[in-house]
Amino acid sequence: MEFYTYRIGEVFDRFSSGKNITEEKISESGNYPVYGGNGLRGYTEISNFRGECVLIGRQGAKCGNVRYFKGEGYMTDHAIVGVCKSNHNAKFMNYALSSLNLNRLSGQAAQPGLSVGMLKKQKILLPSLENQTKIATIVYQYNNLIENNNKRIKILEQMAENLYKEWFVRFRFPGHEKVKFVDSAIGLIPEGFAVLRMKDVIDDYIGGGWGNDDEDKNYPVGAFVIRGTDFPNVKKGDLSTCPFRYHKSSNYSARQLQLNDIILEVSGGTAEQPVGRAIIVTENTLKRLRNKVICASFCKMLRLNTKIIQPNYFIYWMNYLYETRIIDRFQLQSTGIINFKFEYFLRKGEVLLPTPEVMKAFACNIQQLKNQIDKLAESNQNLIKQRDMLLPRLMSGKLDVGEKQEKVLEFKPKKTFIEFKNEFKAAARKDGGLTEQDLEELYKAYCDDSLDE
Image (cartoon, rainbow, N blue to C red; front, side, top):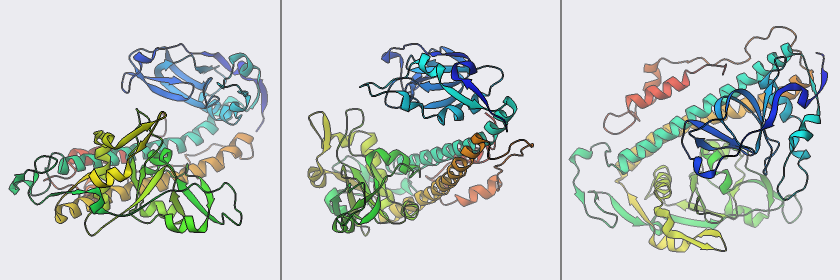
């Protein structure tokens, strides 16, 4: 495969920054995505670009990041819009520019940045359009499968949240029609339910650790660390951001995470993102981190009394406290950083405790959904590994793409809807579980085998 030398500016018909947009025009929802120097900023009701392009972050900590975009959106002045000439492929240029590590050109200024003029002068080796298209098609198949899996994970997470709200917010759990409601410290609750304090259901707790970058005689034990910043990824099964560090033997043995432990973030919050976020340690997490993992020093490990409460129920109670901002009563702000009043939380924090039968049924339903999430997350991990091994070989020409390439990956539904639904029959109870519409939406996502745009 032959390569030709270009200046980056020679590859694009347009290579320029977007336009400024005021903060009040950006929100969490809207018709058009807004992209800035660090990626997606939110959504708006106006657009300034339509078509296919490569976006390069021009300002900010992540300047030099590259992404492919197709559609209509708003590109801010902190992003560079690159519209390829007809003899170049935008998807391929996304990978080619990413391989250049453009962030290295940002300098050491307090606000890192890249200039359009400087980037235009950078040299890049590119194959013919035909080979660009073949390489982009192969790699994009992996990316599309990963994205489809992420969509399925999101649907499963939403199903689990809906199930919790149906059973324990609206109180439409199996058999609810025959249950009376009684007064409690948190309002009317079904008869047989109870309200306990956090200290009644938490058996043990300890702060996390951070350890050392390198192994030495004082830090001999290697283990992964889960930080608060990793929570969103870990919840959907992505463990790639969890760092591996070295720890004192005594610190590690006291903090080693076990199945169904809860990790609670207790420091480092902001007004927009208060502390109190929590995740549960699953069997899949332990397996993929080789049972060598602790939580970070800004977190606490909670070990529950499983004779009283189901961990799969408790984590959704914690998520509910966070989403409704009930958790805010346990915040303490000092010097701009929000911390968590943990001892006060133990004494005064409340837990709604369903009957053992209802709680066990809910935990079983949730476990089915979590098992599906874990399978998809593991599939994504393998796809990412395969793609990242393949990409440099394709980009360097070491792997020949001269001959016609068949699809390297295909996704086809392996089950009919009836077979698929039967896997979720315990969670699909008419009297409070997943609805037929929920399952149809999930099955549709599973059967989405589009490998194009």
